[in-house]
Length: 291
Length: 308
Image (cartoon, rainbow over the protein chains, first blue to last red):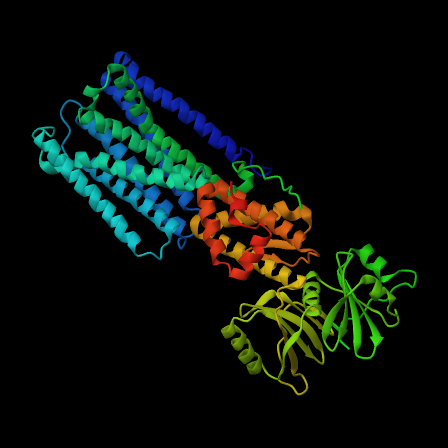
């Protein structure tokens, strides 16, 4: 660490501590609504929007920094480029969502807007990132991999279409068009798809440093699946105490997913950039063996 | 009478210093040659200052003799030749080998033709090259000349690359190809060394594919740093294990390779996790040729040993 005044390890630790505090702040603002009384519910919501935007932006920046550590011909470049692009789409989605909150505060949101386009682009970019990662792990020589990826996308779309029809018949969509309901249903289905693929990768990578950015996607899936559970009327089946717990988990998991992904990307970036000097690598194994 | 690396001037010793004292004092690798008479020669090989093996060489064929038998031979005209680790390893192989093919190579095209034949046959073995101003050995493995496994003596000293073959009169190479005898310690060591080199190359290539060039460089730096205290002449760079060390015992070589694979495994565990490390080690182990795999296996240099 002789050349670095502040070690990357300290930066990561500081960012982790700041993320933890921010998460506490988000939960406090969301559930206690402190600014609703002192200012107005509108400003309480704006504070939340900004607090949600910060980790999203941080994760996207960290993803970009990591991507730039690879040369363009390398396969990991494509993986992390797609991952970073996905995070930038979602960051833009957060901004679009905040703008929507601002514009449509006193009225209803449009059923389909820019933010939906950005979210969907983010899902597909992250899906590509997962696809490249799986292809790399299981071998690029197998032509079936592309078919499997397209098959998974097709199954996700079919499942979403099936669930949309069921929701439509149950009257969950109100007066919205089928396609609007389909997009609404598509989010949790894509979340589940990405989440399951990420869990698979995490199991495959074990506790390896390389798996940790994917943990963020698992948290996204967790947050959105609770939302989907609520939206499908699942809250009617559980006691109030459990509903409260689910609410906390959902509200915490969403920004935490950006934070986890961002911290993992940042740590990987520092390791790649500074190597052992980053202080983020394990201490060398003692080289003592019996002859 | 066989004379190894004849272009190299021998070391002249103070009469008070025995050859053994010289090698021990210098912790040097090299050989002592004696010429008992007739068509015979004898060689005692030292590795890192320790005597390794002694041979009586008659009509090009080396026969193992005891150190006492070697000492009993006349010291008159004894020749002391310090060797690099690679030259020592090749001399060790040469002394345990039997000539299988002799031919004269008089031009680059002849040499290319012979090399192509070895390549097509996937032949493995030691090749000796002699000419007026050149003597040395190279290792051909699975049909390919191994770029870190060659040593030639020239009037200018040792060179560790294949000299160019000039077409001038009288510069033809006398080439001897030696048969591959796996029961001999020198060949068992060679197979183990080649196995370790091939397996590590396969691991590092796949690892680079997975995590990129920078993580590979970090691993190479880390490995070179961690093995530095051992003073082995082994380095890792550009996905290649550059092993120039001469281990006197198979177990010592296995010990060193175990250390290398442990560092590789630990680094991979940290980056890609234990499950993928196991998978990667297992897949690449299968890419190593069966005889090299058997040599690694015999020393418990196996995938399961290097991942948590």
